[in-house]
Image (cartoon, rainbow, N blue to C red; front, side, top):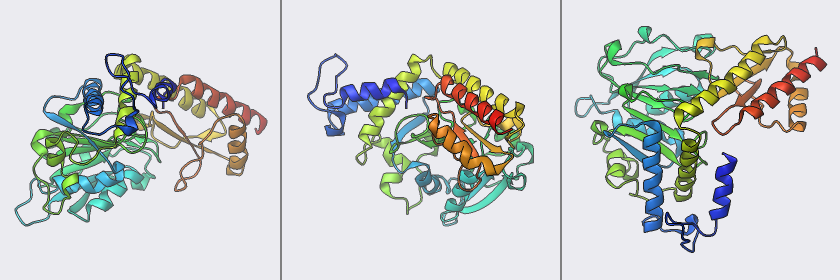
Length: 362
């Protein structure tokens, strides 16, 4: 979270100021979600996010709950029947590039006939399968991909154009850890979803951006609160939304605009990632196994060639104020997350520590 946002939220914790500069006498957590104060907060957050991400008018922005894991079920509950004959299970195709796309594929199998159109598992999830070789079924309702895999550090440099690949399927994108870090080409997207807790705000809010023509196809078993058409028709207020998380996300959206918008934040993210990757590639101690053309700007996994030094590396990093660098338990090693709120100075501090550690353990 940006420090400016945290400071503003602290100042407004007990008494939220309205747009006119007056105080309403209560904090956001005390507000009715249907009161005029919170309705103005929610409307502002939605409008700012639409502007930031350049979301076209024929897409709905939904504020939901459950995180990306819940969306792994909610998406097929809403979209798997798009092209299925009545009474038959819809077909959903997946491109597997790491742990999160795998989870999406496994969950969707409960509600649809799933198929792996492509996978980079044989490479250890160190690259993106060439879209020209994807085996998309002709009657697939959608093709699902995760645009940035946080555990393996793999990111799509650009979203595929399914129509150019000969498919009429909708493209579904899990952009949980990439959203607002770079521009999004909505021409190729049917639906995008993501938990807010990487780049947009605190945990508790899930953002769904869905093309209007994809609404109204939910399975009969889809819970009403998870039906995109119902949520859209009620302005994300069908059930009580995560009010404080929406408020905090709105403050982050304002902060992003003050930084100069998505183009400016992307330039910062490129600079941060290049600084770290260059240090890794110049090193004799550290390495990153991901193909250079699809290395993540958000999550940089790296490994020590001598794994016996892992514990010393982490303890020294913690003493230097560099925290949460331990890699995911499924892959080991280290991982540095460079989300929007991480300043370049933080990356430079990490690089300085890595270089000092290498000199002392060379």
